[in-house]
Image 1 (tube, rainbow, N blue to C red):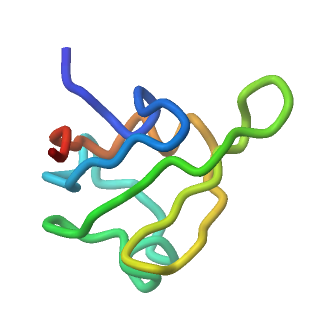
Image 2 (cartoon, helix red, strand yellow):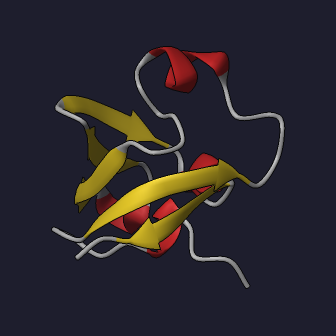
Length: 76
């Protein structure tokens, strides 16, 4: 099992390694969700979807389904 953005807890930081599937929205790539970038889980909405992230200073909200496709490595 791969460790993904969906596994991050509030305040936890990781480095994006790769995408689990090709269908990660192009919008995320344009906003900095790229391999090598640092991602911090800020909070999650009620029922844990969507989740709010800080990716290199850009704040994003993504669906948990999409977050499960982005493989990360714990940071620090």
